[in-house]
Image (cartoon, rainbow, N blue to C red; front, side, top):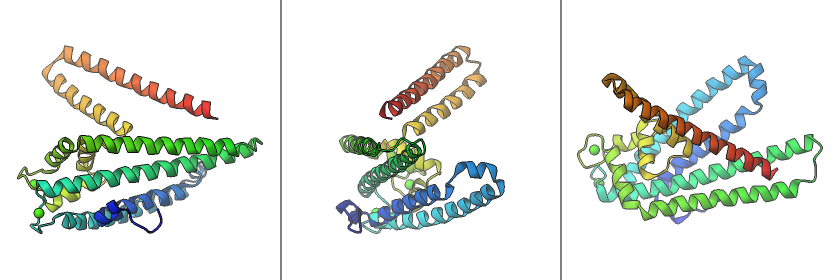
Length: 263
Ligand SMILES: [Ca+2]
Ligand SMILES: [Ca+2]
């Protein structure tokens, strides 16, 4: 990446910084955790680390709020204090494309870290000389991540109008047909329910997050059905849940098999 900004990053400098802060945070946290075994056997150290992470999280949230406000102003081109539908279109597209870039960078970083760890394990087990294979495996993984993200971006661009419209509807909490600053700031706060709503509308949830959403929805429906004494509905819903859990197991097994095949 270096210091040069892509055209997209120049168009949305505040959102670019917003994602850079998050990327740095994840990198710092990953570096701090170090040896998980040591943390398990050293509760004092684990406690200290947890406190430090909390402070870091708070500092990150503050930084993100500042960037979210600035990004709102940046996209409020006519300076009306609100984003109308046309302004929001550009905002959503910037957000989506930068989010996908951020996800890609995270994925590539994770693949690199894993590759280094695998090399270390191989060395410990006296299986040197597999560095070529490891390099090739990493290259394939990185290419796969890039392709997936490209496909996701293409999908968004194809379906942009519908997704942006959905995103607008979920963020516009007071329903006045405009986006106020606080509505946008909430949607840009990771951990805020509106952030997940926004990413869901734009098609940016991970597999895990999608599953989490489905389970939440299912739990909510069950409550209603129980209250109404809807035995048939409950039975059907529980069957669906079992199927969902089964699919998840299949996915996990498939991933494990792929991992083994690549060793
Ligand atoms: Ca405006
Ligand atoms: Ca509104």
